[in-house]
View 1 (spheres, rainbow over the protein chains, first blue to last red):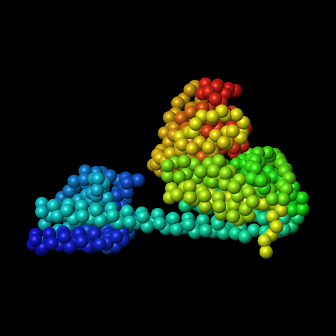
View 2 (view 1 turned 45 degrees about the vertical axis):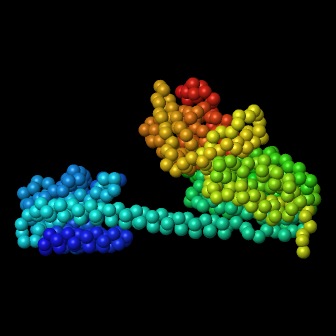
View 3 (view 1 turned 90 degrees about the vertical axis):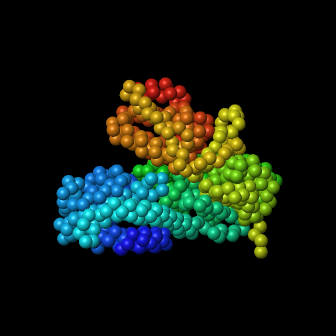
Length: 418
Length: 153
């Protein structure tokens, strides 16, 4: 091949490599074209792994990819990776750095080697490219050195880009599975609520982008209705799994236990056993007697809910405040009680509501929340919930949502609408 | 109960009682965005006689608290039994940060092992208070008191 043809060939290859974003296919292209351009019998490519500081092989038509691993400085390839300079070895077996074991394994006889570093942006080492056995039997020339170096740097840029694309695709795949996990999680929360004369409830969870650990539930037990809001420590998959366990335990416990304190004690006992990671969940559990408006409640480290009277008066429900669940197996939860009159309600929420931030970095805060609750004291729970979420959304604007936002509204003695 | 973004503490108010602490927490309205990712928590370590003092700086949230947890576990594996964590340079802690302390306390629960926390800002303390965990940690205001408590018999 004339020099002109080889240069044109290099340009062709650069274009072919630039078009290839699939990592495996790109490696194939690099190896095949390296053979052609260098007029070599065989080419091999070592990919540099930054975390382990080793090179692993991709040899055309021979050893299994990844089966050979060399450290920086080890052998011909390791030497080039370390010095980041091209190395021309006219007689491999005369060079002490040459390791003949690959020849033995692949029944190949290496004579001459030309080896160049693949360096991408910011001088980042991507790997090493080798051409073996110059056609015609002689050594590689100085022109070959320049050509392989040019080829290797084009290949490095293409490889860098392909790795970025691959990392991006991996990330998207993970995000997709997290999104599915979140959908499953949301499916565990009720979307419809008991419609009973004398009680109306409504709740919603506005999920943050990542999976989190908020939960709510409303369980109709005939003469009384249990309701709860909870929040698991941290975020991500561990929080989501812990939330799923908590929700299942809570739902089972309200059917067994009579008082909110007993419900929390039971769930806490189960969660505290073998909780190696020390995850915890806060929860407020209430139980309303439909006949009397008598409300019992117990709080496991959760932010206190608001009692919203029909005239718009608001008080924090602070009693019976115990420890978050999952840590101390025998924590003695207590039950508090209060009496609701017709038209009075309760508003439960997670800290995602009051800690929601807008672009300038201000919190939605409890004052805004209380003002809204006062103004909507006579609205049905569904309107209250939707209204609170709408005013949080309006406040936050296009700022990212960092935490799940959960609200539950309940009103006693509301006549059912037809 | 995930992490709120970076914040500056609000106006200083009288801190007395649960309710006012909560108000203080939720009404502090001068929070600011700062880079959430990539900000690493700096941890300095100092051996004072038999006690190791770890002093994390910045935020303890779901991104940064694993570093503190790993560091403490590493020290415990290396033989540390008396540990003080000085929180005076922590300006924000999320529930994930609290969980890290629970995990470390769990590893140091058998006597003579001991974990003592000190230097909590009010905004940090109220996170422990709200979750009801104040009672299960050994908490001191001053570092010297924490050292004495950790070194004690």
